[in-house]
Image 1 (cartoon, rainbow over the protein chains, first blue to last red):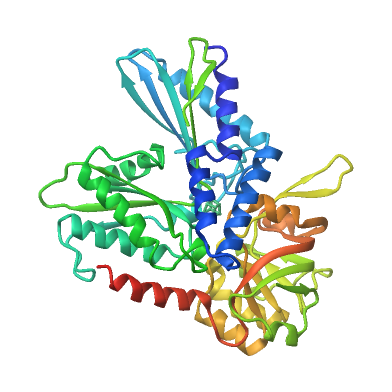
Image 2 (cartoon, rainbow over the protein chains, first blue to last red):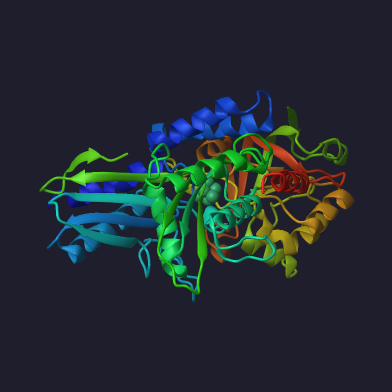
Length: 292
Length: 191
Ligand code: SF4
């Protein structure tokens, strides 16, 4: 895997400076949908210009280059510690080159050593499968949108939300209402119904690996995903919370079993600067194919 | 579209209404968490940072030195403003600010200070680091770099055509409050 360092650096660079096609299409559609001459339209225009500038200049789309989260699908027997070491070097190098901001702070001392390496940074999630393929996906998730994530425990009396899909719908829409103006909308929701608190948030984030135009295999959840987006876009919150027609670009829902005593709905919010890429690697660690 | 040129007069600030698009030309100074706390605790701004009639920008920019040794700003989007809510009203009063740029809006105390002292909250498009950096024509100075580090230091930006939206005006209006109330009422129809 001698080409792995270069491949991972290129994966980090491209993730930070280019938005994936499916997200870009959704942004262009929403720009066209906004009423002409409104501040919502102006905001979407600036967002669209920003995407083009970042790509042309090979500079980060947003200065908050976020939490660095790798998802690796690999065969049985794959050298995970070796991969992790190479990924850490790639992150450090990409930070030196300015593709990532110096963004990782010691929670106790407040020190930032400028490398983006430390406990939890980068985060790596390995998943073994029976095929020989190695696929590496990367999500960069900013702090502003992370701060508006929410976890609800059902039933929720205040929102009159019971332990059913209608209750889930109510708390998800509440999260959209509360997030307005923060977290740089229009955004995308990653949602998990069920699980414990940790697994719920984890699966909610994994929803961001899905393409915006995919379909949920579960028809009921597919319906709920569409309903959440359509209803949110009727609320008039709009880009940046300025008012307007696009509040959400998408909503993706996953499910985990739960304990009889618990019913969590975990919601992660992704800003318009939705940075996600992935590569399939060849035997030498070279990039064979881009996944998005 | 209204053009604001620094220093901004009280009359020009009071004429702004929520929802107005503005472009700013002149001098901005950045200030975020460390600067606000420092001022709140009685700290004095270094000579050279003159914010009377000026505009403060909630921003932790990425600034590098170019080949000639000049500062160059490569990313300069706004940061979340609400963290400065405990300090902002006092800072508006003490420094005589006419504008604060940030994202996400601010609370009732800042809104009251905007009305009382004649200041407006100007919302930049969050995440638009590259578009906003293009509007920064030069970076003549940086202050308090030693004390606060690069993202928290006071950077002086000379800007032209810097775009923002008035979301809290000097007449007691907040677009954030209006949209929240309207969207909450709208949501009630669908649940
Ligand atoms: S929420 Fe997203 S777009 Fe906004 S500042 Fe954070 S990373 Fe950038």
